[in-house]
Image 1 (tube, rainbow, N blue to C red):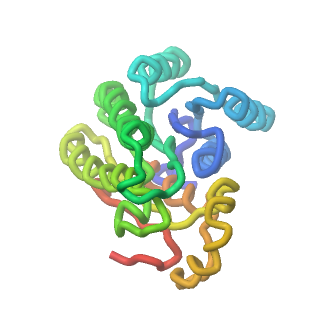
Image 2: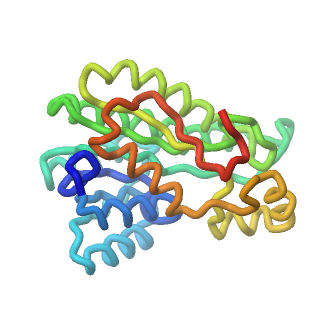
Image 3: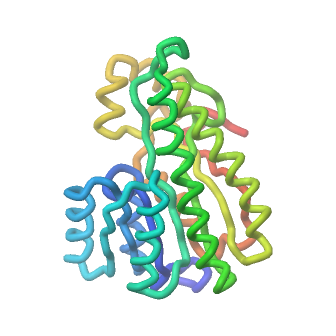
Amino acid sequence: MSERSSIKDHVAIVTGGAAGIGEAVVLRFASEGAKVVIVDKDNEKGAAVAEKISAGGAEVIFVQADVTSSADVRSAFAQTMDRWGQLDILVNCAGGFFETHSIEEQDEDDWDAILAWNLKSVFLCAKEAAVVMKKRSYGRIVSISSLTGRTGIIETALHYGSAKAGILGFTRRLAVELAPNGITVNAVAPGVVLSPRVAEMHKDRLPEIYKTVPMARAGEAEEIADGIWYFSTPGSSYITGVTLDINGGRWMA
């Protein structure tokens, strides 16, 4: 493997790394020889993923944290620096949504919680990452947006779509700010990816949804992780402010 495609010995923080796309990213990075910090609120799942990876010989630590809390985020980054003294990659995978409701039915507390989980967390983590990455004039920041942030598809809730659209603007703006420091900032916008929770939520509508996808299927978490991996490599050095759509052809820019 060439140096431009290698992340061996790079230090990566992956939020939401205990399940779903985040777990797929953690596994991919560990297989590439990266040193991985799993940051997740779920202590049981996070510890289990870290144990599984460590058993294979990879270097990994788990930090339990609520990424909507600035104090928790600062602590996670401090533990990373204490352990390895550097940070090369930040992947913002933490996020999710509640059931879809019309605007009249949406609760203000739910709105605040979803925007904090999906958008505020990206701001808090990117802020900490920028501080340490600037010191070495190198860094890769990748965030998970969504097809709903691109198109406003009805399958997901208004607060979730709004937060994911916010990530697109945040990515472009931060990319311009950090470009002189050797730090790239990009996003990946998946289409339908079937976690057990999503499968249950949309079980009656999946055939209808698949009809809107040229590939006629859902994506796999590993397929999303592949795109994130590329943005995290040294070889992506001239790509910044970009959102990669991975949606089976359902939406094309």
